[in-house]
Length: 117
Image (cartoon, rainbow, N blue to C red; front, side, top):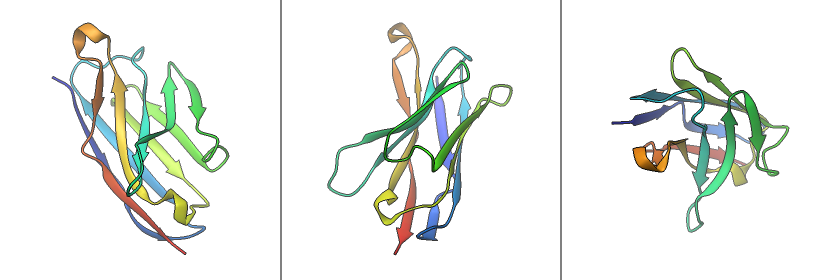
């Protein structure tokens, strides 16, 4: 059983910073990609960033402002968000991809990030 729990969301002014963290429990290994998605009101969930065996990738909308990192020993993934914009307002979800035989994609319950203008 895999469980993901996010923390660190909140309210911040435009231009500010927040750090999200995700604690993962269960059989998750370094070869399993982890990352973050977000969903704004009335919009589809969108991919934000991911990390896989150290390699990081970002959505164009956050590249240069967000940094994803992973603590393999603690099974945690973090998202450092800087220069936040009102359009970054969304519920942010932690994500891990396991092989299909082990259930595929898992998600956390989400944490709200609100950026005021």
